[in-house]
Each structure stands twice: as structure tokens, then as C-alpha cells.
Length: 298
Image (cartoon, rainbow, N blue to C red):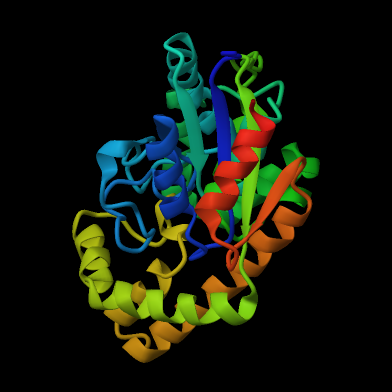
């Protein structure tokens, strides 16, 4: 009996094999792939974000410049017309990426999503940041919206600017309702003893494949450490190397440590993810995932 298409999330820590599993499942179930990685949305940041090489298979890759913000709300609202079209045509969707907040917001259908900020307001705040600096914006945020100021990293310019935008932009929230997909979430569990060596090797491979040159290209284009895209792990360390503030081995070591910490945070997030079915990476991911899909979606 045909009971309609499904929407599957494939989650897991960095370097766990999410993309490979998602692509295999997409082949098996004729599904469309949707990126849910906060930094793979940025153009020109391919190596450092481990972006899939077969980009044409994915929605929501390369949709932003590195100096543009992107939030969970914008992610959901950008996904919505894609998902509506897939559902209308009876197509399955597989959402894959390491940004757990994006997937949770989408699958739990968070209400009251904030619309994209008013362009004039954003331009005004960016101009003030350029002329007055971060401290001035922080002081204004603490004064005008102390609750928001307590919840964010006040040393992060992108988060401070976004908080000010939300403080002053009174546009009402946008209603958000997903099509009635059958929804399922699977997560990949990788023992840290296996994951850590993968992170080390992958980081060195990324350096070998041109991560330093990619970062230099971005700097040459006028992007830099204050831009939202440069919050992706590794880029700041490489900038320090390019500016002769550290050596390459130290940049690699810093990137590895930061990636390990990020993977730990991702694993903590997964433990609290609602209705997540965990897959053991040592038990054969594809057969296990296909069995789960068969059992849960029949």
C-alpha cells in the first residue's frame, strides 16, 4: 500500500560517514538529498567544510557568500518549497548534515520562525560594526535586549549583529508547516577510538588537497575572519598561518583539536535528539538503515 513519501534525517558526528550513507539510501529509495550543514551553504568553502564533490545531487549547497548569515529559521524556510515540491510529486527526501539544530528545527516543525532580516536594517548594523566596532554593538544589545545578550557569545560579531536584527525587526514570525511526510531520523554512532583517527587523517588530507590555497582565495576575494563563513572549523587557524602568526603544523593541530571537540558536542546533541534511531558504525550501516526504513515506513 502506498502511504506517501518519507523524509529521513541522517545524523552523526563529523567524519562518521553521514554523506556516504545518505547517498546510498538516496540511490536505493529514489530520494532527493538536502544539505543540513551550516557551513556547506557557503560558496568557495568546499575543502574545509568537506562538501560533497557530486554537488548536483544536493539541495542547499553553495547558496550563500561567506559574509552572509544563515540561521536555522532561514534553513527551514528555504527547505519548505523544496519539500512541498517533492511531496507533491511523491518523492522521498533525505536531509543530511552535522548541524543538529537545523534538523531538529525542521523535523519538529518549530513554530514562529523568524523571517529573513530587513536588508536595510542589516546594512545599517553592518555599517555601524565597521565604523564603531563590536564593543559598541554589544553595549547596545545589553541595554536593549539583556535576555538575548545573556544567551549568545558576545565575542562573536555575527551572533551579536543577528541578535540586534531580531531586537529591532518587528516583522511577525512566519507560520511553518511541513507537508505530511512520514518522518524518521537515524544517527550514526562511532566509537571515539575509531572516530579520532579518522578526524586526524581527514584533516591532513584536506590540507594536502588545498585547504590553505582555498582559504587564501577567500581572503583575496575580500572575505575574512569576521565573516560568518569563517566560523567553520579550521579557517581561522589557517588565516593565522597565512598571516605568519603560527606555523602550519600548529594550524593543523589546532584544527584537529577543535574538530574533536565539535564531534564530542555533536554526540552529546544526538543523545538528546527526539525519536532518533542509532546505527552502530561497525554493524554495516546501509543494511541496518534499510531494515529500519522497511520496518518503520511500511
